[in-house]
Image 1 (cartoon, rainbow, N blue to C red):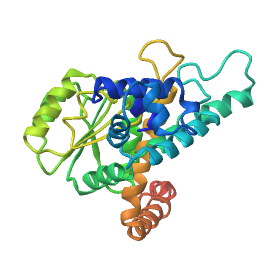
Image 2: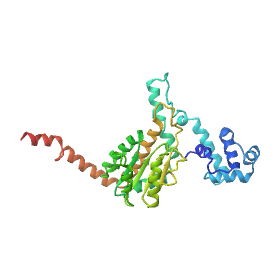
Image 3: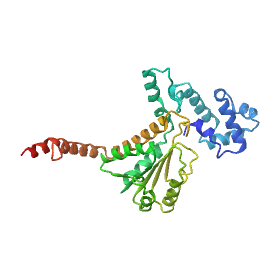
Image 4: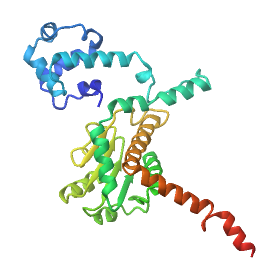
Length: 292
């Protein structure tokens, strides 16, 4: 999660910490040259309160925090956050400008938020599972189907849990040897919450991809990967930001799984390619057989 997003999330802050965080967000460009004494005076707090906030955000102290703030200020002046996730282009933009904005929309921001440990954890869970179940709705299900298609290249066959509207029956059949992957930007689907409660209680591995850092699904999942994109639930041209993010995350997870047995996967790829192109599964051989 980006530092700006952490500061905006007041859920675990005391009133004093929230006051400091609010001031930093409103005056972020003034923070890098500021010392702790000035910040505590301006916010009517204390040195210890500022230090406690920085440690809660994952820093050793105020100096480390200021370095991160400087990087955040720099990022705000680059293209990473210049594209509106809800209206990434307007009527005056050229084809070139539109294509550039869409390209910049989410990948850079998502990469900046990636937690390598969580990506590795998700990849390991999927790699060792006997069966993989994908739960996603709407546009997110398109991303799930894309991931399902990629896994076939690894001789892994994922099941779309909602394909035949039997989600609860599907969930009831999962075991500790399986894993469930939930893809939901808003992360507020009550049915998913019930499923994850069941999976958590029965120690069934689960992975959640969401853009909502306050989603109730996060606390229930074995692994939760959160990437915020400032995309509204209602007023937007399309789901550009969230779906580019999910595609990127799933491609990254797939690549990590692939790399774990890279040489063997390359050998399998060549063998299957030859089988399909030149072997008994090739179209040319089938036509030759039919002509006899």
